[in-house]
Image 1: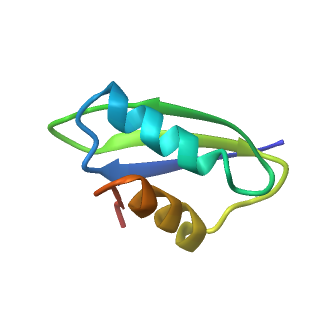
Image 2 (image 1 turned 30 degrees about the horizontal axis):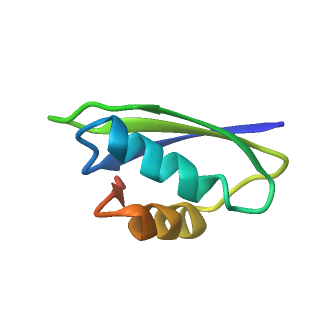
Image 3 (image 1 turned 90 degrees about the vertical axis):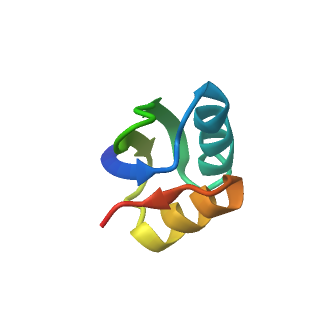
Length: 72
């Protein structure tokens, strides 16, 4: 299983975390997502899957969930 960490802006609550989790789990090979929400700074998202994910597909899934942006 591949584990990756991502830094995200725009998360403010558990609803944000649920929205991102729901969208990320639709990606082929995604098995689990954990989210730590930090409203006043960068939040962290960990993805666990059967393959490596690239920032384009993760970023797209997050933007589809709301105004969430991967930090560079």
